[in-house]
Length: 291
Ligand SMILES: C[S@@+](CC[C@H](N)C(=O)[O-])C[C@H]1O[C@@H](n2cnc3c(N)ncnc32)[C@H](O)[C@@H]1O
Image 1 (cartoon, helix red, strand yellow):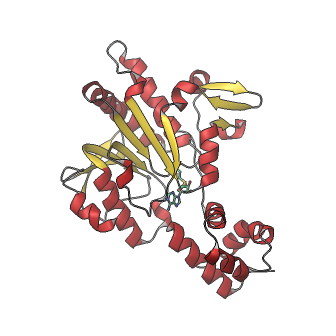
Image 2: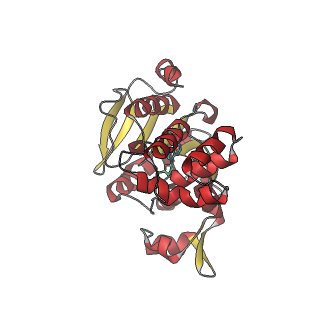
């Protein structure tokens, strides 16, 4: 049984409304592949019935549908030039900041199954060790890691990775230092895990409850959104950054055409964005409009 044009229209508009994710023309196969099991498990004979059920659902079914429609592709130290920038420029700057301020706050805003925030935590610790005496303690860092996908958050919190997941970018020296072998899997060590707090969060919502950050990673997620939503999210990201804060986005992404609120700085071959007019405070007027 294949999905009808009417069914595809209903489901893609539901997904867009609740997650911002645009399901492109011709992606009927994606909806079928990802939602057929849920449709059957929920006693629906077709996607129209599933859509009807979603309208009266108090939340759990909606979360499962959105979860199934997310693409959680990620890896350790994804994008070499970005992680060179992190290791050589951003982590040292954050470590210096940690000597001056009580906490340094980092947000991985679409963290998927945890590889991104744990990679950042490991590089911060690595930088700290390189610094030697006088390095700030790890407790000075707080990493908030959020994603709309509850199953991705669950996996990230469990912090256990298969050999296959480890083989996707993990460096041997970091594997030895930051993981414990647990049966067939590798578990991130407690000192790294305790730096990261995971939460389910939809980027369509207001960012105000998270407070402000010294460094935000919002990588490889805006590509799924409409231009209008990208514009709103860039504005909210600007509002959530500290005055000297830094924003990292995916290598194929750019704020150009959506906002001129950031200055681009090239660090170690990667483009990093700094708020032009001072981040928190100065940005609240723009950010307020988008919230
Ligand atoms: C391709 S992964 C990128 C993961 C990681 N940032 C990286 O670059 O490797 C995109 C992530 O964005 C999440 N996502 C999609 N829509 C979202 C939304 N509206 N709010 C929060 N996260 C969302 C997905 O669940 C998925 O885990």
